[in-house]
Image (cartoon, rainbow, N blue to C red; front, side, top):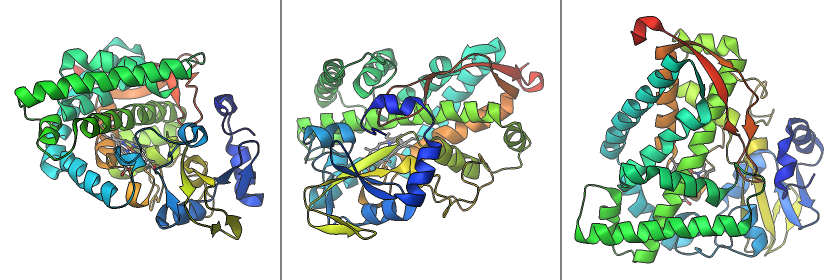
Length: 389
Ligand code: HEM
């Protein structure tokens, strides 16, 4: 099973991960020589152990295998130690309760409008027509990107990360990344002369260099767009496939909080993250040498039968739900609360305006060894006429 090859993820790996957790939970992946960690407890242990592991040599297979990340030490996700804490404190100011309140209202308005439109039409591609438009609008508002530029950024984000297209290559991705960085460089220059009420203006007033600001805007955009989008698409796919769960949601028999966390566990859009050992250590009795790459498979940890009863059941009432979809430890997703708001608002709008969902065409999988999910999802919504008209 070549976990570095995006094609591996075109088929369902549930059985592979089940037997890996049972018989070979920590193993060296050949070729490449990176370690694969599949159990919830071991993933947690590595995530907690900042003394033995770093993210500064990359945090996903693509950069880890390429020998590092060019934004290391400057972009939050690939910075460690005191600098990471400083950067994180600055970026966390974007997610204060009052900022999140404001974003929640914006997400609610936008999501309801999109769902009303989709439900009224009946048939749509949920991925393109709804899910694509939610995170980009949210992160766009957070950062102060004018709405007229959201489409441009969405296109570049999709090109930069993966994933919709099997034939996309590294050159294409790096061109897209450069487009995004150039975009934020221009927007930052603009905010320095014309301040606005947004995160970019706030960042411009800190001691961060222009380069650091631009890289971290890029990281909020990349971190916040595709992951949330893929979770929302999977939420609708799962709800259409599990009628009893849809009924629970629709009848208000589950809290949006619990349902949202189950959507996150079930979808786990970021399949893995990774670290490099900076000193000799061990994981469950396996010796890990300094310099070795360790990959943490969240998609496996979130189906670990020793933590989740009946893990392959989509169960919106699941509590507790100690999923690792947002990682853990110092690099725990800084946008987790925002992502939860987006998913909860989607579930809330679906149950308000629709009485049923049916998948009416073959969904298309994305192409990536890092993210998982679908780039198209043809669906038919049954409108709740009492709410709509
Ligand atoms: C970090 C997942 C949404 C921005 C992470 C990590 C995970 C993750 C697993 C840890 C990375 C590591 O261990 O190296 C997700 C999922 C999301 C989501 C599943 C949605 C369903 C968001 C949103 C934003 C965001 C909405 C911003 C608007 C970030 C950033 C980091 C991060 C900047 C780096 C944090 C740090 O290194 O301190 N995310 N994320 N993410 N995420 Fe998210």
